[in-house]
Image 1 (cartoon, one colour):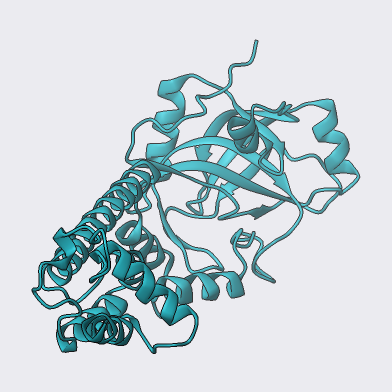
Image 2 (cartoon, rainbow, N blue to C red):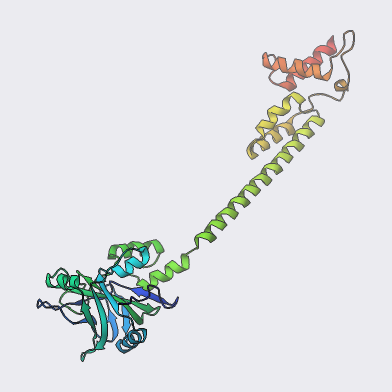
Length: 325
């Protein structure tokens, strides 16, 4: 029974590479027993300017230490299945590895019937390895080999397969991250890491900001209400405003600008009710001056009837009227 390799990196420092390289299969109509996985040992450069360091002997040692045959799939289905849980059938199995005289890493493949059929029909002409590598791009171990259709570099059978991200997408990503348009993948990854904020942290900060903003708003509203109350109470005590006017002026103080306007208006006003004590007396039984409450009502009616411009003028006229009576 064939064994399949682990679908997770061996350590947090390992990464997965696929669509990075591809080797051309022989075009002689035969099903090859040995195929090229990597064209050489050392540094290999891909069309999208990525570089990987391949140590063929180290990869062979890891393969033999694991004792696991590696699947040959279609278009890296083993990798995609590990992300989605979908089915990924093998069309062959890598049962051995060796280094060729030219330094390339070869894999011996036990082809299944589907794999043989695909190769004989020339439906697929290239293979591409799926492998783990370190942060500095040193290949550590193979996971699978895929049959693919598109080479990356013309007239070079050894290297193929383009980056999964188109060049214009790379430029757009670079612009969004604020780095130069031709930045390397490493520079883009570094820019992403520098500006990345975990969603949980982001949500907590937003919640804290909302709570603080609400608290500051409530404190500001309470502070303004205190200033409004102090202003209006002071105006009442100084007889610069009648009780009936309080609600009107309070509504005008709903904003900071309105508060300052009312404050200036009341500061310029003279006392509407001189200190005559009328606000503490009831209306005499027979004639005389009315009470403060009655005077306020009559003054308010005069303003509404257009007989006075404002409460101050109305009160003054009424005082004159009753004084002359």
